[in-house]
Amino acid sequence: MANYIIKRLFYILLVLALLSFLVFAVYNLIPMDKAADMAMQEIAANKNLIYAERYLYWQRRYGLDGGLFTRYLRWVGVVPFYSGEFKGLLQGNFGSSVVYGKTVLEVVKEPLLNTLFLNLFATVAALGITIPLGIFCGAKKGSKRDLAVQVGTIVGYSMPVFITAILFIWLFAIKLDIFPVSGMSSVGKDYTGFRAFLDKLYHFALPLIVMTFCSLGGMTRYVRASMIDALKLDCVRTARAKGIRERTVVRSHAWRNALIPVVALVIGWLLGVFSGSIMIENIFGINGIGKVYYDALKAGDNEIVLALQMFYILLALVGNLLVDLAYGLVDPRIRVGE
Image 1 (cartoon, rainbow, N blue to C red):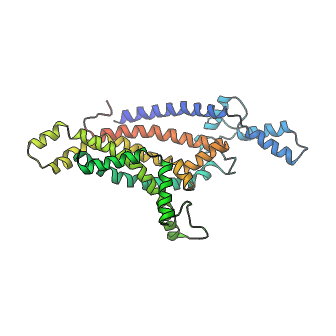
Image 2 (spheres, one colour):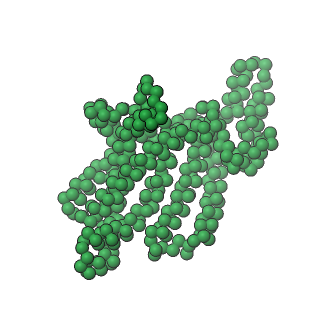
Image 3 (spheres, one colour):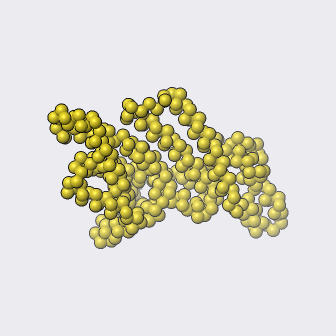
């Protein structure tokens, strides 16, 4: 197991280095030059300045001088800037946002916490509903309740997220006036402490309901299919042949085998809470990481885009490793190290 993990970590570093260069090269093809923009702003404020000198100054300050590979190594933190300093990813420097005028870490810190807060609650709620419901439908395949759930999951799975969000806003915010339409805090209120936390929960309630509802369809059907396959296993047939009660067969034999293929989906879902929901965050006006990423793409704020893109790549690579290890833990038949 230890040798397998070390080997996979080496592959992760190799793939991360390759993808980081490709991503950096792609974003450098975008016809944007912040050194030229800063030089032009200085020239507009002071006509006595020489554009070529100011342009070279800002190039060196941002690390934009030199070839593509040199700029990439400088961005990673292997090659120093003109000043002799190492200010790359390896030093924890993800650059500065041109739009916000802050470092990338300062920009993404609060949105990342909001995204985690929102998505973690929605994920836990969805898993708490879908896993028991999927197991029940698989065990009661063909019953009226199973058919009713299947119809409901098909409807929920087929509807686009923005349509579901609009319907829920119309019902819960406009007609019933239970939740606010959008925002993260009450307008004109300056709550602090636990009262501010409750106000935030109140504004996050409707997005949470929408995200949970949209997640029910696909996950429930996946767990149901896994449960139906598990009930056909030889161990389940043997348990039934011994005269064990159906409830015991389902709880002690079938559901454990049914959850084995669900492990990958659950881990991927949990890791997905970091990426945010661009659609939900934009509809409900939530300052989350998905909205920041979308706004950075529109504004051409490449430092934020590059940092978030590398974060998502690393998350995907580590997620695949965790899925493989989890398979080996939940299913003794799988030997991950072999």
